[in-house]
Length: 258
Ligand code: ADP
Ligand code: MG
Image (cartoon, rainbow, N blue to C red; front, side, top):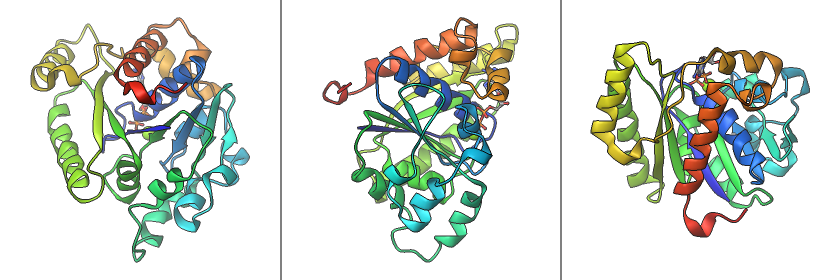
């Protein structure tokens, strides 16, 4: 199994939307896919059709009580896509784990013995706290959604610093599989400029596929569906399919077990 953390400490940059739709695209391509919701807001869980009332065991139980992932995973509304949901008690996990020695490695340990999925996406909360740290320690690689706006590169350098620290201290093999430009607006010259700057600065790390600002992407969650299923031909869905194809192309050959 390959584990991909979707992280950026800024909120509202498209992490959850990317996690939901890329995971859906992978499941549709035949990959047995696990989506881990690591944000107490639980938007990834809602977005794949698992409302708060349907959630029982969650990522909180895995992190805090060391329950096996298998005992907490649910099926989603999408064939081939399973979910480890988040519940609101996850917001207390950072505090509850403060004195615990292996607090940064709880998720990594849980995933080490987990079988039955080919690929796993972790939807991180908007901070660089202990939850995101658990994701970065557990992940093989990182996918960073980057909103095309003025301070995008500044926020990114902070994230890259954290990645470096995680590589040095905890997870030397952590890679960055790519940076996905999100909420791109062709009519806005600033987003154009930002996207040019980001490509100039980061080169091939930036995915070719760019996610446009598209209202269908923001409507879909209220129907409990990924945009890819809610409206598979809208520009946003097409862009996420292209992004998923590119992502598959970047996965190490020996890991493409699906
Ligand atoms: P994050 O998980 O980084 O906080 P979200 O994926 O939840 O970000 O996106 C924040 C908000 O923007 C949500 O309401 C979402 O539906 C909306 N959104 C995300 N991507 C797009 C897009 N490409 N076009 C339009 N709306 C988007
Ligand atoms: Mg989110």
